[in-house]
Image (tube, rainbow over all chains, first blue to last red; front, side, top):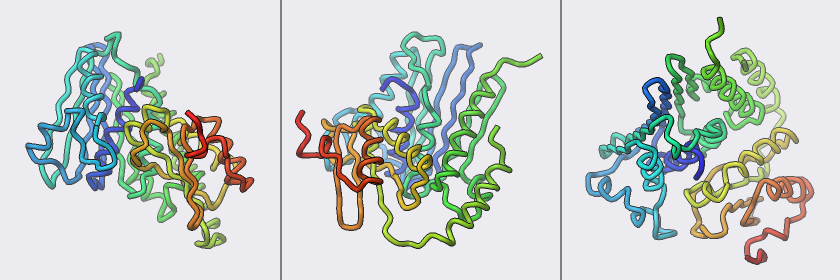
Length: 184
Length: 121
């Protein structure tokens, strides 16, 4: 996976499997202090300590269709090879939090990539899980929350084609705007 | 900026559409979106399908990300569900995704080249 947004998509599939009703994604870009961090938090069924200790092992998976589980271990590797760190904490019946940090200017830090494509797919999840996305660049913040959108939609599904295209444009423009230089 | 006013307009238009639409025979498209699928390129495939559905205004077609069915070596896998009929495609890329929409979903003809079982590695 050559984009961090692909890892985010992958990790969030675990939250969906864990019957979460809310997934929160936080991207914090601080070039001045050479820090880039990704936090993913869910309110799913969580893991006990034994499972938690095995989860970064590529030969651990809860799936029965295959014998390996690479998602978490690949994300961990992506962070550690880019001068960062990876932590995962979890409590049964409360949820799980994954934090990956990177050195912002590290040559091996993959770009975030098409995060709008990742969010689009997450929003289309079958269980209708709410997604909150917060992206901070220096002191500028963009927030997208499916709960706000659902309130306006008043029963019209998020999966409606026109709605989904609006969502994609909103996210793309929102992220572009927080990356723009301060205008004088 | 795509404003909330735009979203409200979309909502009002959609409310009119829903009353015209029955619950009958939806076509469901499933895209494998586990680690294997994602690393083989399932995300652009799914996005292409979403865009095609929106662009061509296909009313009775939905697309959903799903897990892994255990055939990781031939991902990205796309399944088309029409009532009892299930068609499974493998090694789908953006071009094949477009063909599935045009030839299968709109044209009613299965894209044989990427059918699981028929596809030669």
